[in-house]
Length: 619
Image (tube, rainbow, N blue to C red; front, side, top):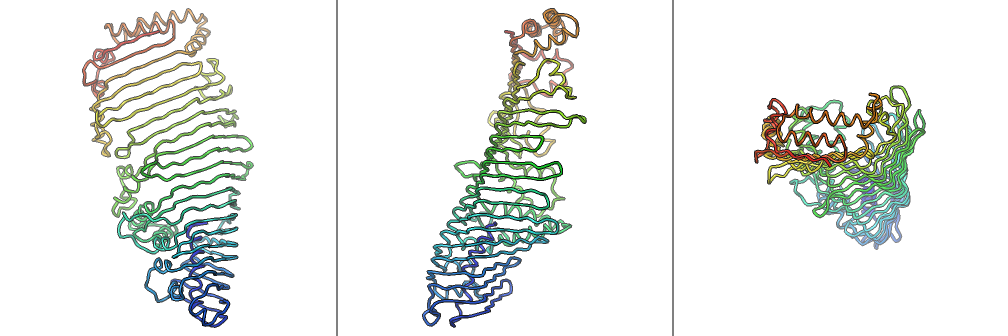
């Protein structure tokens, strides 16, 4: 149920009585007020002691068969009961006066009612070819002061959306809302902003909906949410007002073709609306979805989805907990998923600077300026047990992942300058009948399962104009470890320039300052030797001696016979003879580093090695 619909019911309950209070007979019927854009009809007005006393004030009264139309939306209620009304008759009459020029926000602020009860209300809204009808039962609004509702409670609701092809049904259990500020909501919908820096105003404190159910008869999709809630929704007016912005979106959605002016208008409205609201917190728990298709049905369960809005004190955060999916052939499970520190600020600011451009006028540089900041994505406890098609054959898949992390933040011209990609304990049972060359090679080496981890992390330091390659590593159970670190200097801000020519020049000027490589064997080398020895009909030990002796001659032939070359070749030969741990360190002889462009044009590896200080050890 949309906030607009819920607020509309609340507003309906307040404004519907205004017409009735202009009359003094004990019972009135068939009242109509129509000011052109809004229409209200009341079947009957009933009140105790509807006489001179009521002419001054009415503590309690009721309305029968009320209908309120606003644009394409109609609100209907068979009965609305008011009690504890302390607003004056003039205030209530002014609330929906067809001749009043006063803002609805101001009129709502003068309404004070102890309680409003609506046994049944119906909201019908038409958007394009779709019609949405929602029925609310037993709605109670309590402690309304100056148009602000302290608490609202709806026992149940049911929504049906029908269109040209499909029919969607939505039902809910108990719905509650606290601190709903109707004057603030009226201001957002009616007021046009003077600037984009208007302060945010809170619309409601908190809401909760129990037992939501959704069913789509066309797709066969159905889902349930045990509880859905949130708190601290804030907003500020847009250039066209919220009502005007939504009107633009609706208008554009049902147009077949859009002119350049339409596109520019739409982009401007999107930027304005995206920056017009904030959500403090939102959460859904006990989620279950089913989908029926030709190949059977699938079941998805999620324990919890939560969103926390970003503030000066904390970053924005989205997380999923306890995800499970299953069908007749597959089982997928994820313990947790989170995205922290993401931001659409750059996207919103970029859209604002388009200044009337259409989609056709947006070049690649502008598109890049619209890219949001990712932040840090984490996934934990992933597992899959299923099958896939491999060149017509069913291949069993059993895999798991302890953790995955992707950080991409601190952007400069939309390019992240802090990057970290990590894969922790990716495990997989290797199918013996796979046609994939990589899997076939691992099976040939005697592996039935793999367990690998990867990590790549790099940061750019603007103060030192350096990129630090903090770590690039690979680890495999019963295989080994490879680790690489390094530094690249003379990397200024131009590397991230939107102009690719400027960025290329900056890259060419970069200079390598250090490189450290570590290789540690933990079983892969022995398996490779055993496989190769078997193919060459010799022993692994004999083959190892042959390879070690060859390395002592081949490596110098490739990189020269300098002292550094001999040191490196001896370390490699010693590692092959007794594979354990190999460490190689390289730094340029020139303190400013080795230019990347310079290294590319050097004729052979020997020339590169002459410009480096190289040390290598094998343990």
